[in-house]
Image 1 (tube, helix red, strand yellow):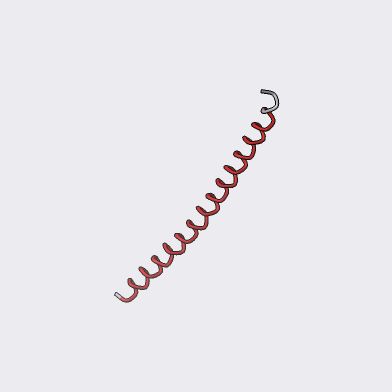
Image 2: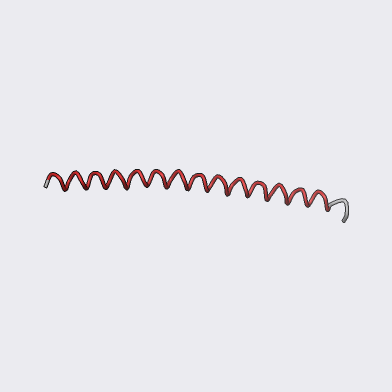
Amino acid sequence: MHLSLLCKDCLMDGVAGANKDQVLSLTEVNNAVRQRDGMTLHNAALVEATNAPIE
């Protein structure tokens, strides 16, 4: 019985560790998406500024 509790503890530790890894990965993805959105907005502003004198 004691051994099965240890195995469950090990499994729970593994799940907790994987959860932390997933949070870190999602944070990286979120930061990359924010950075890309910022670049897209910057590029759109450049296009607007370039086209303004033409109109």
